[in-house]
Image (cartoon, rainbow, N blue to C red; front, side):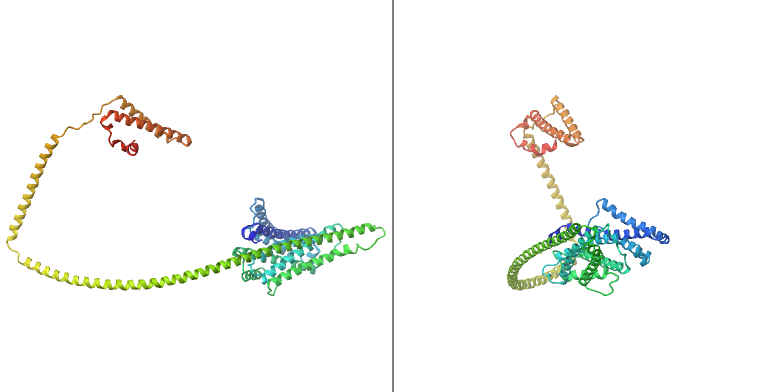
Length: 535
């Protein structure tokens, strides 16, 4: 479904697997016929083929790299299949150019060619069905009547029908393996096989590249115009060399399917004479019951193939019903989204109108405020201009007075300076005298005070033991940081517990040796933070 394509990678892996199997089956077909031709050709042709041995070894190395990715589990949908496609084109071109057309046709193993060709067509139909199914699924809802949608649907239907025919032909080939009597390959028939193979490979390349590009660019679906543009570009890029005239993709797909149907019909006509001619002819030595049993067996196989076709049709009908249900749900969801969008648009329009009204009112208020501010600023500017003119007049008057004072300097200036110096000296002497008097008063006050208690440190055994214990405690704390893991954490926790005990012991000793500090005052309130940080 759509969720599997947009959210997972199983569909991409299946498409990659189908394309790889198609390329490998095609390579197997060419290599089988090439080996059979070299085993049955003359000496000169083998000698000429030996010239290309180094090139074939180079192609083999590219295949070895692909096999290495497969063995190491690195082969996924992101792996590039271009090396296998280049090896296939090189060996196919070498096989066709190395031998003349008639010699090439004579050296073909016809039975093995048709058996492998059926496998190639089956893998190709899987690849076409997978790629067309992906493109058919990711087309945007509402483009069900477009050319791209109908083309993908046509390719899916034709690929399923051709796959049923291929299974029937494969059963006939396996049943006629022992009694095969081929009449010989003709050049025209082999050319038609090559043309059909080239058209099928081009169709798979076009659909594969388009599916990858559309899956990258689609976000929930891709429009018909964009998909059709991608298909047209890839058709012009991967169109077969025999296709001289430019066609649309749907016409090219119909032509490719028609070529494959013609090949299957031709193969069925080759197999029918051995089935039909011996079916109704009675021989004297043959048993009628055996012929009837063969007829019943073939009839049962036809019934079984029809049942399989009917089952496939039922699956397709169920898939179409499920797709219709999903589309109905998507349509309902789109209707709900449309209603919600209309409500949001109506609400947004109302909010927009209200915002515009508020903006207009705000603009009017702002304009009035600007006008009032402009008037007040103009009044303030006029006031400042008047004050500035007054200050300029005062400055001019002061400058005139200063010039007059500087012009009338007399001999009284020296006496003024002398009087100022005497006044400063008197002030300094007065300050010095005041300091002496205050010092005498403070000495008398301090002499009248009672003496302070000055504790005298006395060396005691208890202080020495506390000092030694504190030094040992510091050394243990430093050594505990050298231990790693949980053991070091446990050791540090024990040392912290011992440190709290030692802290209480030190403070108790301090209060014992200094009893005046043990008075009921606020002195002990700083212990919790400052004293612990000090220790």
